[in-house]
Length: 348
Image (tube, rainbow, N blue to C red; front, side, top):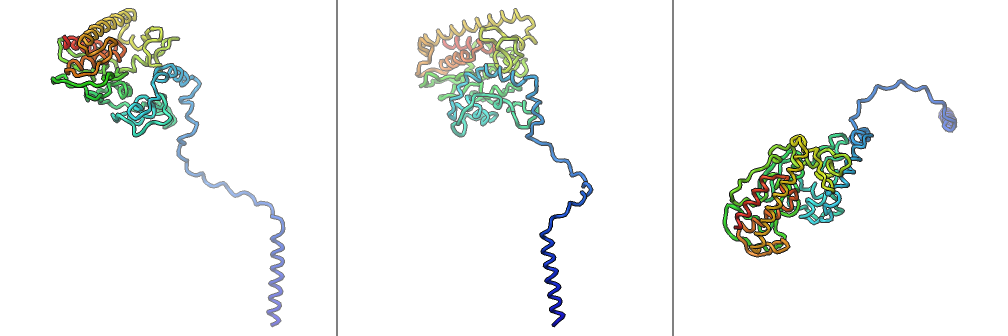
């Protein structure tokens, strides 16, 4: 019993000393141990700032492109407020990206906070944060909404997604057939901005006539179609070329930088442009006179709703098609000439 009491006393005393020791200050840290081996290298960052200078470098490359774009019709006159499902596919950046390359005719819903066409519309901006982001959002060949023909003009396939005739109700009739068509709207026609279809010799009413349907050298030889001329190097202080997408400045001065690879004599080129546009303008006047005389157009050259033969409706379509192209033959002179001449013959 005495031994047990002694053991308990010693244990209690040890615990007192132990608790007392816990309350003393911490001693100095021991020396650092040797460095461990290096760990495996991590993967490259994807969204860091290390590649920004590839595009945002000191040469003001993006600044120049943005300045040009800000003076383009895409930026200022593209009617981006037209954000309904059928209009948004071309009039808004978001709608274009939703359907580009698919042939779709409408977005899934109305586009909220619509934007005009911009850098992100055409380029894969900030996907890799490298110069690969300049790649185009689509370059796939395009099957046209009207006529179902497919065209491939390289990088300009991007442009063809919107710059084509839009389908109408009733549809453009088949010129190989005969019949009548009832047109209930004065706006029946290919819609605005169908330059891509005319440039490639598609989207029109090819009535039979004495003039064969052929494409000009612009269509058959120019690589990447629209881009070659409309995005040629900017001509000095003129607001044409580059991301303005203009061939001529507002004062009418041509930017020939995209032309000189074939048209080495620029004076002769400008005379040829004037002569071609004068010829097409004269043919347009002749066709307009025929359409008015037949009661298909009114005096203001607007379509009069009514029942027409296929050739009459097709001639009206072709007039509007060439008018909305706005180049008066420069895009595709041979094809434009054939459309107008054969349409005039069909109304004789």
